[in-house]
Structure formats: C-alpha cells, structure tokens
Length: 129
Image (cartoon, rainbow, N blue to C red):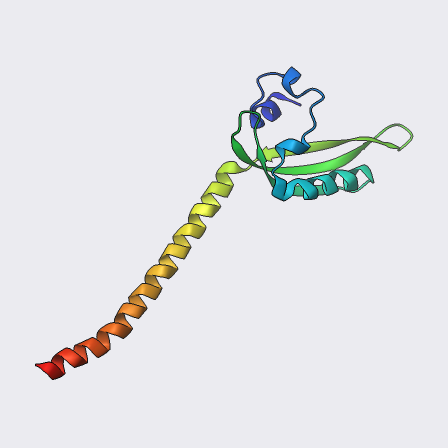
C-alpha cells in the first residue's frame, strides 16, 4: 500500500496495515459486495466498486476501487491489484445536492398547500365582510 492508500485508511505507517484484513474496514452495508468483487477478480474478472468504509481512527470514508487480477509468467492468477480513490468529498456534495432538492420540493409543496387553503379562507373572509 502506498502513502495515499495509508492516508485513506488513516494509517500512520505500513506496519499498521501489514497483514491486516480490509474486510472489517468496509462498512457492513457493502462488505458482501466487496467480498464478491475480490472473488470475481481472483477468478480473472475486472471489477469496480464504490463503497463506504471506516478508517483506522474511526473516520467514515467513501472509496471507489478498480481491481484487476495479477498473473505470473504462466498466466496463473496470483493476486490482485486495486487502484482506489477517496471519493468522500464527492459523496458529500451529492448528498448535499439531494438534500437541497428535497428541501426545495417540500417548499414547493408547502407553497401549493398554503395557496389551496388560502383561496377558501379569502372567500369566507370576503363573505363575512
């Protein structure tokens, strides 16, 4: 794992992750999909996955991985190579945009309801006058 990978998982040194299984860092919601990706790659397929994880210091992160099999000189799969990118900021931006759109929809709904209630009330007030 290179320095960028260590930073992604909040590791201070390679020794912190050497021999460590990555599965516990993947959030429960994505763990099976992650395991399936690894199995598929070790069968010879190329796979990508966007998933949630938690760094070694407890920081929630979003990652995108593209994994491919690595083969020896005989063509046998010996391991896999994964290029992983931290997409946490992009996911936050997407979530904020979704929240803004939802709030705008609620605002439009509230305006429509207020307008529908206001019309009969104006009629009652005018009649009473």
